[in-house]
Image (cartoon, rainbow, N blue to C red; front, side):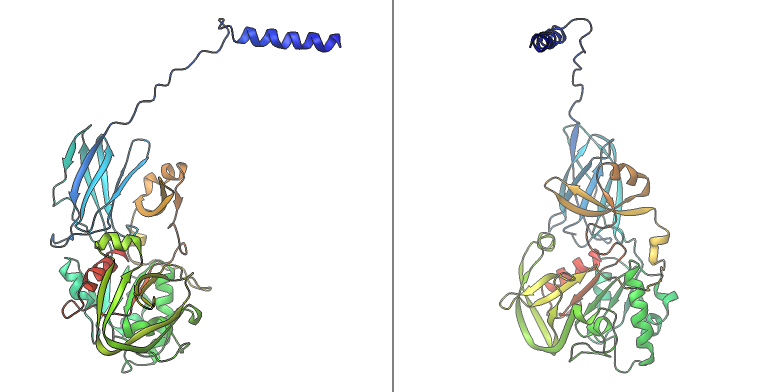
Length: 393
């Protein structure tokens, strides 16, 4: 018992000695961290020709320790970015930044607001874009209205992997997969589109051109038709939609913010259109739906993957020094961005991951709209949605 009592006294004496503030006591280090000085940058994101405001664009920069400062443009293209003071590179991007992006050198002034010149904030085209001419649609006109360029290709070109691999995006206008096309081409086209998307290329198809995805030679009337490259279990569409106006709801928060509205009327101006009968909700994201029935009208996925697909360089991927990363913002919000390769290790050290935040790691996007994409006619607010599609593939 005495031994235990002696040990207790020794411990108490040791504690008192360490707390006495003697010469051997550890020094208290003063916190020398100071708040980062910041200013504001304002501007308006516009299309390349300066005619169309771009909503939903990512605007961001980094401080000296690679902390991200991020905002998005509103439906009129306007943004205000809080940024660290000093010489900064400002990045403006749509989608994940692989196809459309702009870099700006700017001096951010402490506690001041600097307005960026409109010529600086135009969104540049990085991607090489192709389109297949359709019977009913002209997505190429909308691309041109924005000030961007696209090259016309044919079904013969789609059957040639060497030809299509030079592009990043391919637009398939309604009616371009025609029954008059040589049926022998479809097997090669379907295989090539699978390779294209699996290696990061993106495609957009409208209405009857769902046949490129799920099979058939033109408009489809049955599920599980021969051909296509998207598994039959993932999507079924039938040519049973009736003409007329359909009240629609935008089902994606990012798209709603970019557009500035979440309801619209879609004019189905032909006698029949491809109605989505069923789809795999784990594979497809619904961007626009019919208000009354909740039927999907516009869907997208970047979950495409298949076994035995050869690794093939697509578009500008082999030439770029930018890398797609997933960054987590405050509030546990994850965003996919393209950043210079040199900064990737620093961002990874702060918790970012290489690759997109969701979807298959190498997959490009597939967008499908049941409605049309011609620049003239009664497509109404669908025109603004299609601008978003172009910029976010």
